[in-house]
Figure 1: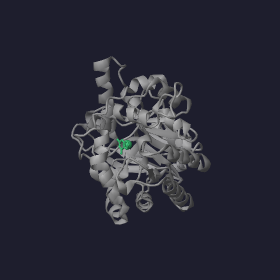
Figure 2 (figure 1 turned 45 degrees about the horizontal axis):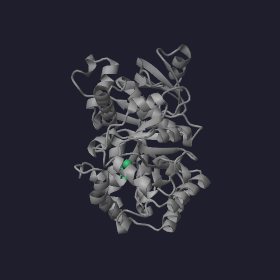
Figure 3 (figure 1 turned 120 degrees about the vertical axis):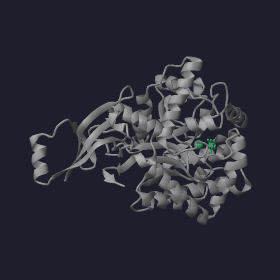
Figure 4 (figure 1 turned 180 degrees about the horizontal axis):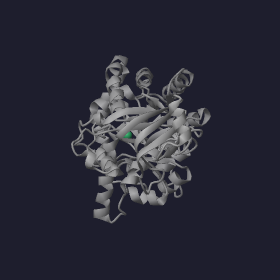
Amino acid sequence: MIRIFKGCIIHTPTKDKFEIYENEYLVLDGNLCDRIVSQLDQDLLDLVDKGEALVMDYTDHLIIPSFIDLHLHAPQYIQMGVGLHLPLIDWLNQYTFKIEERFADVNYAKKCYPAFVKDLYDWGSLRSVIFGTIHNESNQVLVEELDKKGLSAMVGKVNMNRFTTIGLTETVNQSLDKTKGFIDYLTEKQDTKQEAIVTPRFAPSCSYDLLDGLGQIAGERAVPVQSHLCETRREMDWVKDLFKDRLNEEKTSYSDVYHMTGLMGNTPTVMAHGVYLEDRDIKLCKENQVWIAHCPTSNNNLSSGIMPLTKYLDLGLSIGLGSDIGAGHTLAMNQVMVSAIENAKMRHTLFGDRMIMESEVFYLCTKGNGSFFEAVHPEKSIGSFEKGAMFDALIVHEEHPVSGSLTPLEQLQRFLYCGEKQSIKKRFLEGLEI
Ligand code: GUN
Ligand code: FE
């Protein structure tokens, strides 16, 4: 059965503009997008008559690529909005670590993760790249909940062997063994849409030996990597001090610590934040095709800083977008996009950075983030409705008295700024409604 989606189709094959097809038809080929047409030709009409093609009529609805969240912490769902008067390191010590400790109890995970996954689903983030905790049993609960809802994610067992609570401090061997165990669990698990990602919390939480061991595991098992990079100045100074014996005149940067330990680009790598990338970081990130997950809500909440988004885009860095809950206070990627736009506008006004276009930020959340999944699955095309792309889509309609009088682009703008979960009427991942 060929499926044809009728409605107002909007996507961003390139950053510089929205492609908008008002009242047109997106024809699928199985689970993949095939073509967008303004009218059904005779062949398609014949197939519809014969019952071999089905028109899914979403007239007056937007059909957009589903959202992707490139960086978030599942356990911190219960902490969203809490303790945000503090800067990063104090917030971690006073709130986050204490909450993550509770996930030693799998029953705690069973209480929290269903609500987290439901919210992720409700807000239309059908793919995501997630930090769990150090606890594999609880991480497995997270995987099961994601599968129950039909979402697809990369899930990381977090690694830490220092500068955290006693309860969260692992030895190097424990940390490495549990990482291998979690990778094995996900590799062997049948019928799952989740996959493992190596997840050193950030360089300060891990000794050089641990980072090195994780780099080896990532390489040997061909597993992607996620961590944090250059989120705050204090953290950067700390990294340079902690690893001063490893850094030298040539290897000067935070990124060098990850690079030396095989955690930068040997396999697809995403680093959260990058607010303060130095020239050397930029060089290493570009050379190793590291994705930077921009997390504007989090950067604002923790007063971390304003990432120079347009500068990084113009330098050719691979940028994505993440909610970074619970330093971020919402899983709604439409709100995260708005925050990215607001931040870029502030930099434009305050520092003269180039102005951002909305299409650029929409691209980051869909095709930009999708490119990270493509790096892990080169056979897939993700994040747009171009020919051959996975049909990952949201059907959006706002029950609002004026929405009919808005142009399609205005409807999208309104959804980005004011959209609620209820505005998302249907969700499709790889062609299947979930
Ligand atoms: N750096 C290390 N851990 C974290 C975390 O949990 N959240 C944020 N925002 N930054 C971090
Ligand atoms: Fe984070």
